[in-house]
Structure formats: structure tokens, C-alpha cells
Image 1 (cartoon, rainbow, N blue to C red):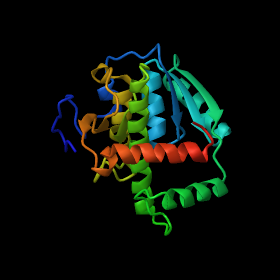
Image 2 (cartoon, rainbow, N blue to C red; image 1 turned 135 degrees about the vertical axis):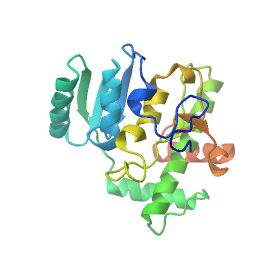
Image 3 (cartoon, rainbow, N blue to C red; image 1 turned 180 degrees about the vertical axis):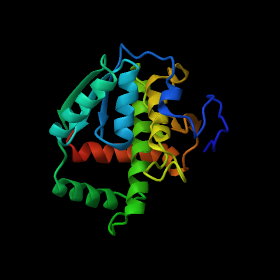
Image 4 (cartoon, rainbow, N blue to C red; image 1 turned 45 degrees about the horizontal axis):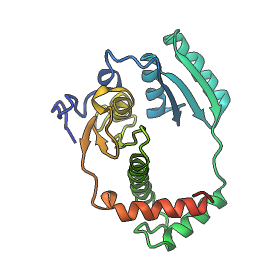
Length: 222
């Protein structure tokens, strides 16, 4: 982590905000779909990308709340292009089935005994592995689409005293979405708006492929 004001190679640090890392950048030709867009980091990401001219689609569980937030954002950013649609979540039964298959697959992600801390870590590891494998497959097929993963750091109500605040927590995803420094970069991991090194498991190509194949088999896709 690039602590406090210590800047990394990108010129940004842990204290950089989403507005700062996108300053002077225009995304009027882009469309972003943001999950969890009605609160926290998702809301700040929505606000900043809309501020930079990106057409933002808010994927929310409660459309009514999403529309209220949209109207609030439009008062701040009258020119914003924001749409809202309902995000359908899989049933709990499907999640449990996936968890059981996941654990029996041989992947190092033991989720028989639920722990919020370990579950969070497992989900983030899976996200990085998925991004890496998708990036590899797209590159192999010659598709000009980049895929990266990131750690936004912890942000909450007391973040301004001990951790990151929401404005800082949303910086890395906004950086990856808009900054020209990352054009053409794919299959990398970022934190504090800088390229970083994940755990050895997260860099395991065989594990990433195995996770991909398991996910494909469970969703009945190739």
C-alpha cells in the first residue's frame, strides 16, 4: 500500500481520491455498469464516472431507491447520463450448491464452516483468478478487451480517522476505468491506483483455469 501521501509509479497514493485520479479525463464515449451502485464505494464510483461524462448504468437490488439516488445525482450533475436497472441475484440454494462443489473441487477454498473473514478472502481470491483467466483467454483469442482486478481497501464511516474514506476507497476502480495509464494493460492486480503483487495463489495459472472450468460446468457453459 502506498501509505498516506507516498506516491507510487502512477503518481497517486492511498490518499488519492476518485476525483483526483480522474481529474481532466473525459469518458463521454464510455458506458459503465456498476453493481452496488446505491451506496458506499459503488455510489461514489457512479458519481465520479458520471461527473467525467461516462454513461453509467446502476445495477441495484431496489430500483425505487436507485431512481431516488439517480435524481439526487442529476441535481449535482445535470448533464449526467445515468440509467437504473434491477440486479437479479441467484437463489441461496444455488449459492450453497456452488459452495459445496467449490469445496470438493480441490481448490484451496474451504467454505464448509462459514467465517466472514475467510469468506471475504476466498471471494477476492476467486475474483482475481477469474480476471486473470479471462484476460488470458481474451488475449489468446486476439480480442481487444482488457481485464484487471483490484483491491479498493477498506472504507467505512470511521475511515477518515483510521482507514480510507469512501472518496479514497473508490479511487482505484475509477483509475482503472478511465486513466490512460492503464490502456492496453490486462491481467494485472492494482491497489491504491498502482500496480501491485497479489498472493502466490492469486497468480497460480493452473488454479485460475481450474476455477474457470468449475464455474463453466456449474453454469452449463463452455
